[in-house]
Length: 148
Image (spheres, rainbow, N blue to C red):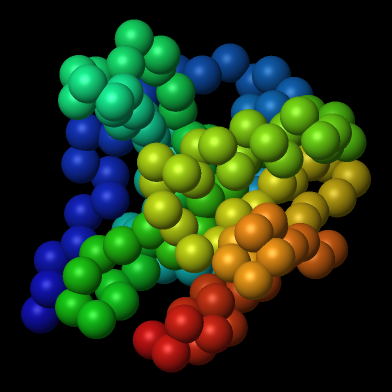
């Protein structure tokens, strides 16, 4: 059995106030586990994103991914889905932020979620861009699409 610990040194230790974005995140976490069947133990919340610049030194920018869902893929614990939560309808800037974060996370799937909408996407190398569809995809279907 392979041990997978996505939460190791990943989450904030201080309580977070119930701001609109945090409410979106908490409702989404419940939906991911209860409806889309994501394993609770494979979800990291507010995970720090390591950003190395070209010199190899740690960049001064400190970023946190709202949610990263992991999966055991070919015996390794790897990011499956990177999710960013927004308090209002996402803009092109929000999609750009999500895609930028994923250059460091390397998840095969990304999602942008607000109170009114959700989009799931993946990078299409043939088009050299991300392709999105409305809605969120369940855990088993995401894994199946990877052949896992």
